[in-house]
Amino acid sequence: MASGPRRGLAVTTMASRRQFIVALAGACSLGPIVVWLTGRSSTSASTGHAFPIQKSDAEWRKVLAPERYRILRGHRTERSFTSPLNSEKRPGLFVCAGCGHPLFSSRTKFESGTGWPSFWQPLEGAVGTEIDRSWLMVRTEVHCAQCGGHLGHVFDDGPEPTGLRFCMNGLALEFRAGSEA
Image 1 (cartoon, rainbow, N blue to C red):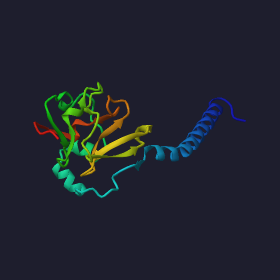
Image 2 (image 1 turned 180 degrees about the horizontal axis):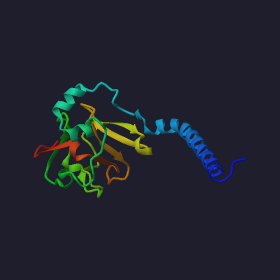
Image 3 (image 1 turned 60 degrees about the vertical axis):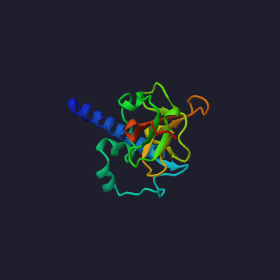
Image 4 (image 1 turned 60 degrees about the horizontal axis):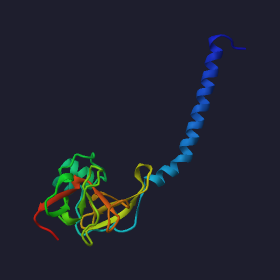
C-alpha cells in the first residue's frame, strides 16, 4: 500500500486522467456542432458561384492591399469606427473596392451608431447574400454580385422603408462623389 507523497501523486494523476477523458468526450461531441456553426450555406450567390469577375487568389492579392484582401477575399471584418466612409455625407456612390461595381447610393446611407457604414438598401442586383454561421451565430453575409467580395452583413433592425441595415466594411467599399444612381 502506498503512503506519503506517492499516494497523493496517484490520486492527482487519476483526477487528471478523468478530467482529460471528460474534456476529450466533450470535444468529440461538440465537434460536429462547431463545424455546422462555422460553415456557410448559400441563399443566393455564394463563394461557390461563378461570378462575372473571376480572378485567382494570386491575382486578387496583387490588386488588393493586404487589409482589403483580408476583408474582401478572407471574409474578415474591420474594427468598428475606423473607416472614414462611416462619416461620408456627400452625394455619390459606394462601389466595391475589389472590382468597382456600384453597390449603394448615398441616398440610402444612414447613421446606425455601429461604427460601420450602413445603408437601408443596395442598388438593384448589386449584392448577393449567403448564410454565415461563423463566430457561433447565424447572420446573413453580403457580397458583391460581380466579384463575390465579402462586404459585410445585413440585419433586420434598420430604418424604414426597408427595415434593413446593410452594415458594410469601409475597406470593402470606395466612394465616388457626385455620381449617383
